[in-house]
Image (cartoon, rainbow, N blue to C red; front, top):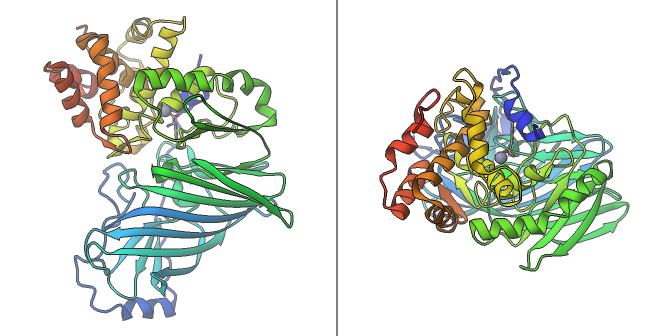
Length: 475
Ligand code: TRP
Ligand code: ZN
């Protein structure tokens, strides 16, 4: 049986070619850019962080410490108005820097309160502050914008970003879509805290990440104020809008749960969401303490999306999830959200781990053992798409959500477990989550950690399961 998430992972659609559109720089702004003075080469922040799968994702030269987003979404006209205040720190001298922002019109842009020059080039918003920023300087960028948000098409053909629904929007940004609704340093290498305030027509609910600070209604509109205080990658931000039934409670561990469910999904969702506290409790025992102060679920009715996303602290589902999808998305809170990728090539660190969490959950709740799941997959012939490429090397952004990343990635972890034994294996999982909490991981660091915890040379095992093309032979 395939969950919606797995359907998408296996789904292949034509790759749409996207051409960068060079926007004309308004004359007055061009003058400002010119007035910025001698912008010596080498003082411009780069247009990407250097991720080979998404060369324009993120930007060089600064780190965003905090995003303050104030949004207004009219579900009737589909227009979004926004103000983004980015509190950032320069990591080099910057005469100019980029933000990732696609589509919406920029109506104003200041750096430390001074009007700044800007131009658009595809997903790059180029900003020239009136005064160059010093290396180490803290600065504040304020961008006001408006328009009708449009999702982006990913290299694998799926849509992400701000995706309109019949009653609002399904908002999920992996790997690229954050830039469709706010200007960002759009790569998981940069993590920040967020305050996200969203105003929608009365009767709609806007659900975002972290804790709900408050909500208020005036003049037929309701404003929701959300705070994500632990660091978050931009792709994990959401501001999903719809007609939702809301349920709130606090778990025995003091985690604030907020579930929002589209009523068309509520009868299917209810029995699964009821298990959220026990799933989080089980995952906390296996992976270590839950990394955030808030949790929950956003169950939308958006079947055309075809996937769920582990939006931080509160996954968003395009339909009522089944139990293994609930386990999967919440396992990502440890693996993917708290411990973030450094490069998209390492995507198995997210998907292999979350898939293995499903296998473990099944094993410990009366279902198939992980060994049985492994054996069932291993029985697939060498021609099966499971063996199309090794999970540590998907080859391009078009394959990061394909079956080998999920299933063979999980198989790699199972092989590790067999090699080091249960006691050491679970210690490795917990050490990984603890040592990189609110931070980043890489495959190399995971292998080193596993070798350190086990005292074993695991090079051949990982090389076979993560990097060797084709179906691995029996060990
Ligand atoms: N990371 C999601 C999950 O495994 C899946 C996902 C997010 C996805 N964005 C996607 C799958 C785009 C395909 C295309 O739960
Ligand atoms: Zn996943």
